[in-house]
Image 1 (cartoon, protein in one colour):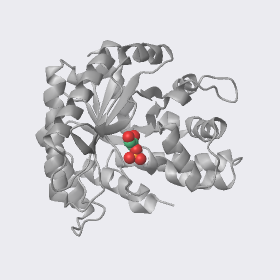
Image 2: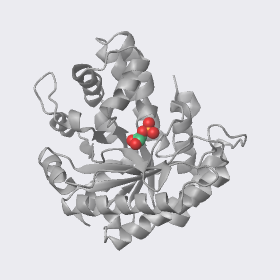
Image 3: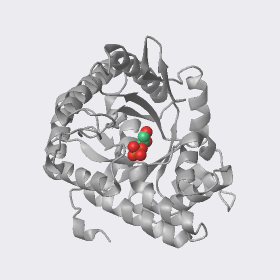
Amino acid sequence: MSELNNIALKILKDGKGILAADESTATMTKRLDSVNVVSTPENRLLFREILFSSSSMTKCIGGVILYDETIKQETSKKNKIPELISEMGSAPGIKVDTGAKILAGSPDEKITEGLDGLRERLKEYYQLGAKFTKWRGVYTISKNYPSKLSVQSNAHALARYSALVQECNMVPIVEPEVLMDGEHSAKECYEKTSEVIKKCFEELILHKVDLKGIILKPNMILAGNKSKDKISNDDVAKLTLKCLENSVPSEVPGIAFLSGGQSELEATENLNLINKHNKTNFIMSYSYGRALQQSALKFWSKDTKNVEGTQKIFNHRAKMNTLAAQGNWSKNLEI
Ligand code: 13P
C-alpha cells in the first residue's frame, strides 16, 4: 500500500472525519462578528486551540485543515499548532489555494487561484508538519452555469494542484463544491455535480495523480436553498450515492463531504443515511466546517473562558458525525 493511501485511510478510519478549521481571516472575521467577538489573531487562535485540544480529536477527528496563519501559531503552552494536533492523534492539514477569483471570460463565475509558487509553499508546509492539503473549486448553478469554461478550468487547477501535492508527499483533498445557493432542483444539482466530478477525474488522470492517494470532498446532492423543490433526506442520500458511484473511480479510498450551509443536524442526518444506504467500497465521512463548529462557537462567544463547556459541545458534534460516518447515528442520541 502506498504511503499516501495509508495517510488517507488513517485520516478516515473507523468513522473518523476531518475538522475544516481553515477559514481565511476574512471568513473567520465574519464568523466571529456574527457572535460579537473581535477578530484578532489571538482570539482566532484561542477558539481554535480549544477545539484542537478536545478529547474528540483522539477519537473522532482524523485530520484538521488549517489556514496559513494557524499552522504558524503557537499554543498558550508554546507548542506549535501542528504538534498539538499530532499529539492528540490527528493529522494536520493545510488549505493551499489563495481563494476563488472572478473567472476571466465568464465574470459571474469563479476560478480558484494559488498555483504560482505552490511547489515552494508546499515544501514549507511539509516542513511545518502538514500531512495533507486542501484546494476548493466553487461552482454555481443557474440557467447557464456552471459554464464549460468554469468546469474545465477549475478541474485543470485541481489536477495541477493535486500533482504538486503528491510530488511533495502529501495527500490532496480535491474539493469541487457545487454551491447550494439558488433556485435549482435536486435533479439539476445531481446533473451538474456529476459533470463537475467527472471532469475533475478526467484531469486528475491526465496529470497522473495517484487516485489511491487523494480524498474527494464533494457536496451532497441537495435542492437549492431557494428552490421550490422539496426532497427528503433519504432521497438526498440516495441521489448523492448514485452520483458518486457513477462519477468516482473505484481506486479513490475516501470521500469526505463538506456541509455547505446545511444545519448541524441536517449534515449529520444526511451523512448517516448515506452510510446506511452505501453499497460501494468508498469510505463516506465528513470534512465539516460550520456543521462541526457552529454551536461550539456560539457557546464560547458568551463566555470565552469556558473551555470545558465549549469542548463538551464540540465533542458531542464530532461524536455524532463519527457515528453517522458508520451509519450508527440516531436522533435520540442528540441532547
Ligand atoms: P463547510 O462544512 O462549512 O461547508 O466548510 C467546509 C469547507 O472546508 C469548505 O471549503
